[in-house]
Length: 254
Image (tube, rainbow, N blue to C red; front, side):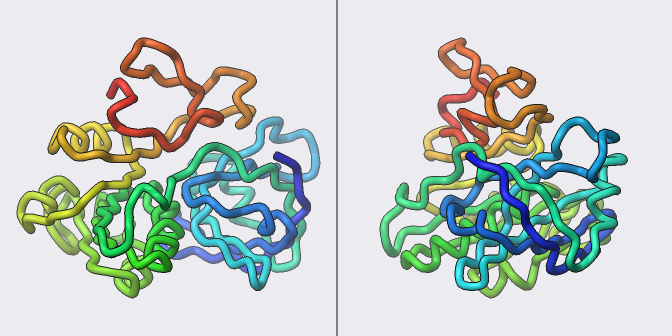
């Protein structure tokens, strides 16, 4: 991986504390796999020592643009939300192992399940599946109505269901409730979101093959510091930023 200097095209709020930033630069030439992420340098001084990892939501090679959606969690992401059109951003990436779009064949069905800020990387995955003639069904879970984003974009690519924990929008309950209540059928599932959601999803149908993207706090982003480890079924330790973040659900001890 390398560092690239990118330029801000836009940086807009799209939901409660949720922002969509579009960057332009040569890094897009090496972006191919959905589910990867980049590490963004925050500011130009020494106020923020660690870069911030943000998943890649959309890739536009023709225009050399890529999209990221992030949530303001602290001072670092607040600083990113203040970036303006034309500002320069130092980006390291693309990082990690993403989703393998060749795990399904044409005319098969992929179930894409996202929770909160785990939704964004599934959008590029859905687009790439569509190009291959693979049907996608999307279930997106949020806490409440003010957190919902990208519903229309996913709907353009396939059947889309929104679940909110408080019932303020869409289906009341969790993503697993929608799968059960709607009797959704699919060949394999692909998911990203909170640990509890991923665990519930994998336990729901242990016979199905699934691919999950883990959300962990990261420091270096390149596997050197072992700050974002998870345990595998065989008892070994895996670095989420380097060996993941996407894993076969049967390989991880959830």
